[in-house]
Amino acid sequence: MQRKAKVSIIDTTLRDGLQHEEHYLPLGSRLEIASRLIDAGITKIEVGSFAHPEYLPQFREIHRFAMMLPRHEGVEYTFLALNRRAVERVVDLKGKGAPIDRVLTGQLATSVSYAVKNMNRTHEELFQEAGELVKMLHEGGVKRVCANVGTIFGCPIEGEMPLEKAYEFVDRLLDMGFDEIEHSDPDGAASPDRVTEYCAEIMRRWPDPARHVFHIHDINGMGMACYCAAMEQGIRQFECTLGGIGGQPANRLDGVAVKGTGAYYFTQGRTGLVSTEDFAAMLGRMGYDTGIDTAGLICLGGYMEQLLGRKLDSFAVAAAGTGTGNEGSYGDAV
Image (cartoon, rainbow, N blue to C red):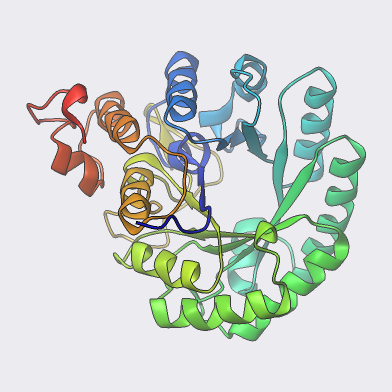
């Protein structure tokens, strides 16, 4: 089989995945996940958030964790920093030698209602802040700064959104100096046909694939089909989590209420991203060049089920018999 173009998976288990979990995962377990992702060939890993620990206590030890991360040539670590104080913490820690290669900041939902509810600011206030933050990060030595454009296809408050609004946001953010745009569907509103339309226009206007990352929460089971549609239009970077975990930050952590989280927007059981294991397995069968040891990744998915104490949403782990409640061993994963 002729190998196809390189496709990169950015694994966000340690950030988007864990923020939805209701029990704290110790640093030792996080470090093992990071190391095993790297061993399996994942070289782009989003590892945590610099949000205030009162609001995201799952990342209360982010400073320690950042300094403990394994250093490997070619591995890129991403952190989330969505306001000035968080960015100041990033710059300070990078100055102390933390491997902070890429920072996600500038969260712009095209839906006005979603922006106000999640960020408590207007669009113009968010754009002004984004311009200040990208400058601070670049001046602080961060090589790549990524902005998030969300609710592209729909909003749980306002419903379907016009795609033109997202194109407008992407244009403004790239003009501000952002290196990448994370095109985000946080609520599972995307469908393959709309993704095809959107990504075709994105690649027509801004054809460099290194500037684009796709991020879909697989709430309605269309995530893999949407990622395929995006690949067909030239998108080459995709965000996933082990076992498809993740979603809105948890309301409670270890039985204690988390400040300011409030009610969830949706009641479905599944809220996370496309499964890293499933997407990697599909890419391998399709002949894409990923550099990933799929068997090792499936083993890690089974280990993740053991860490969290429940079955996760990975077809590949279930098929290999390596997860919670299965009798297969990690060595049997294929």
